[in-house]
Image 1 (cartoon, rainbow, N blue to C red):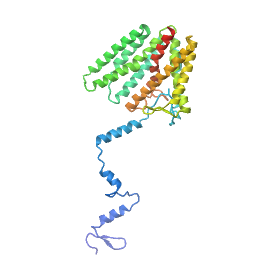
Image 2 (tube, rainbow, N blue to C red; image 1 turned 90 degrees about the vertical axis):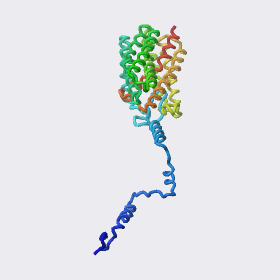
Image 3 (tube, rainbow, N blue to C red; image 1 turned 45 degrees about the vertical axis):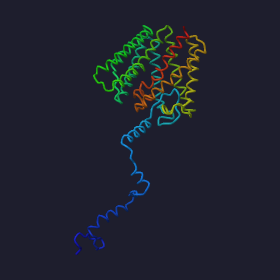
Length: 354
């Protein structure tokens, strides 16, 4: 009879109970895929034992990696140079073209019927863009009072169209103070400076800048001025897109917008200057050099607008500011270069035409 605690074996022998755990452990150690633990003197063991990284440092390092990993959807005024699932340029191209054609038809259809109807379209587009931007900022607990910003927007746009630059500036100043007071009356002092700065940003970009559409549209040849403004900005986008896809190699601002290239920027500049020179001479009877200069200035501001929005999205850890437009992202993702180009185009056309 086997001794107490002994386990019978298949061969008829016995195995001591005290040794059973060791035997099981030995058998388990021999199973395939069992990783050996590092010895005390091994490099991995030394690395493990000497790792003294604090939780704060680990969180910061992880956050940095996460921010760097966020894919930011860039505007294409300076082109793109890499491939993604939507095509080499990173877009759903058929959807982007369809949306672009639809928006173009809406703009032209309203612009050449009733001017005030076009202003309503602009107001709706900018209102959606502002809402997208405010919602994106809220993901980082940045609170911008949306109601006073949206309320001040039609006052600025209508004031610019019917009253001129003075009305635009006055309406902007009043809106800023109302927005700051609105945030103050919420009674939360924590984060007020941060929220106030973001609120002023949203009131300027895109809200007040969009008011320059009213200034462009107000003169008798306002329709032609708006067409020139939109055309040179779109030319910048298309020229940069094509040149970036075909020739893009040298990164323009890799830390901000990794897909923008100097080759794409060159394509944007050429397209802008060609379209600007053609339209200024044709629609406004201006000089060729005036149109070329306008195109050269427009491409710089269009690219800056794209880069500024890329910085905002990267800081917020977002790919797009919205999802309204297939192939484009949000409406604000399409307004960035347009809003940035408005002021210089208005100034130059005012100088050229007296």
